[in-house]
Image (cartoon, rainbow, N blue to C red; front, side, top):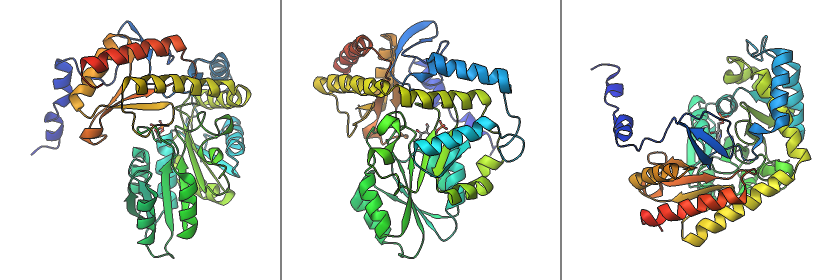
Length: 393
Ligand SMILES: Cc1ncc(COP(=O)(O)O)c(C=O)c1O
C-alpha cells in the first residue's frame, strides 16, 4: 500500500477527457462577462455567479486599480497583526449597515468565513443543525467544530422541527442554512425557521452567498427580503458572486463579532483580503445601492429564461431565483448536454453525482443583469435543440 495509491487509481477525469466530456477547469482568456473566450472560442456565459455583471463595471475596475496604486498588491499578513487596512474597516462598517447588524468582520474567502465562524461559535456539547443542501463550506465548518451535527431534509420545516425537538431544550443549538440554495435555486423558509429557533432555544445563521445583489431591498439578502433582520442572528456573505471580487464576511451583534475576531482561526491565521479585492467590493456595494435597475434587470432576465425553459417542458425543480437548474437525472446526459451546448456557443455548469443524487443531476443556468434578451433567446434556442436531441424534453 502506498499513500498515493488513491491518486494513481483516480482515472475518471482522464477517461472523460479522452472522450471529450471532461467539463472542468476550462481556461477563460477574457473578462468574466456575458460572453467569454475559452480555447479561442467565444461563448455566451450562463454559468457565472456575477449576478449583477459587476466584474466588468468601469467603476469597480477603477476602484481596484486605484487601490493597487495606493496600497500595493497585498497585505502580507493577517488582520490580527500587520494586515488590517483602513479600507477593511470602512468595508466592515458599510457591510454591517447594509445588512442592519451591529458589526461585521471580513475573511479572505467566503469558504473561510464559514469555516472560521462556525467552528468558533459552536463547541462541544452543543448542536449544529444543517439543511441537507447546505454549501460544502458550512459542512466543513461544522466538521471543524466540536459540536454534534444533525441534518434536516432540504427546506423541510417538519423535518427541522423533528430534529430540534429531539434535543434537550436547554442545550444550545445553531441552525445554519443557505439563503438562496446554489443548486436548487430556491429561497430558505426563514420565517418558519425563526419561529422554530425561538421555540427550541436555537440561534440561526444564514449564508447569503447567492442572495446579496439578488433578493431584498437593493440586494440586501434573505433577512431583509423577509423583513427578519433583527431575528436573524448571524449573516454570512461572500464577495465572489454579486460583489464581483474575492473574500467574505460575517455580520452579527458586536459581542459575536468581537469573539470571532479573537477565536476564528481562518481569520487569525490567514492573510487579509487584498486592497484591490476590498476596493472592488466597496465600489460594488455603492453601485448596488445607486443602480437598483440592475437588480430589476436581473429579475427580468430570470423571468425570460425561466418561462422559456418551462415552456419547453424542462423540469426546474423548486427554483425561484436567477439560479435555474435543468434537472436531467443522468450523469452521461448532463455531460453530453454541456458539451453540445458549449460547441454551440453556450457555457453552462454541469452538476453530476456525487455532488447531487444520480436522479437529480442537472445543468445549472445562472442569469446576469447584463445579459441581453438577444443572448438569452439564443441560449434558449440551443437549450431547446439539445433537449430534443438528447430526449430530455
Ligand atoms: C452558499 C455558498 N457559501 C459559501 C461559498 C464560498 O464562497 P467563496 O467563493 O467566497 O469561498 C459559496 C461559493 O461557492 C457558496 O455558494
